[in-house]
Length: 269
Image (cartoon, rainbow, N blue to C red; front, side):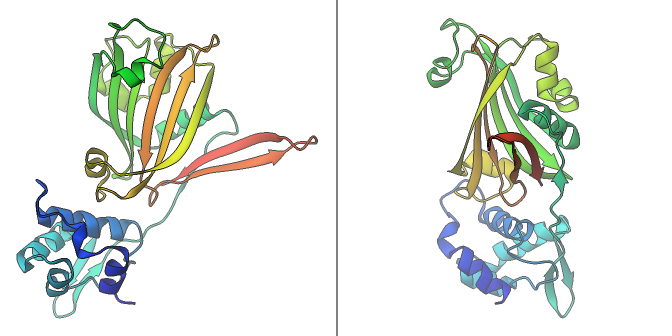
């Protein structure tokens, strides 16, 4: 199966939205980049030509040319005169090993192995659906953060969090240098337990743009609620992950009574 057929099998021309404020060339570039990074288009395979892209996705050749140019600028494809354009990226999943301890320590370990970029940091009154989770006054403010996590310059996670107890002196620089859980602990926020829910979600435009994927792409979704010893909620985290770059892995060991004895958590990114 050639590259054009692989693309058409995964997508169709309606995946591009002419009415979107995002230029068509960028929509096409994002789709092609997602296919390359996700392994749909394999390393060394020939990319569709400008004409093939133009015909398959109902765009002009100028749009197709611009999309291919953007891929070449990121060294994701290589142009060979007289032969065409070829994929120049090989996906090599790497396991970020986490200690055989609790989930929070594991996540803090991953925080040191990858890079974070803070998009937004503010103290504000949360929306009603978040306020209902916290035992606080209606006019009390929480720390609201939006962050992107990357591995080797490849973004794989988009985080939105609401936290109680953080000092207003906290800075974006500190959050990008130290794990968030470490800063919470230094601020006196003592997390005793956490509950996690894993599901799937179609990529919303904001998260899709941050992760470099097409809107509507299926993403792994995690909601984590953290509590103190008295079960007072201290933190709400809503995270979405690009499954082409991240996998949540657990290894359980059964004890003598047949109950799970321990877990190993990691992320393939």
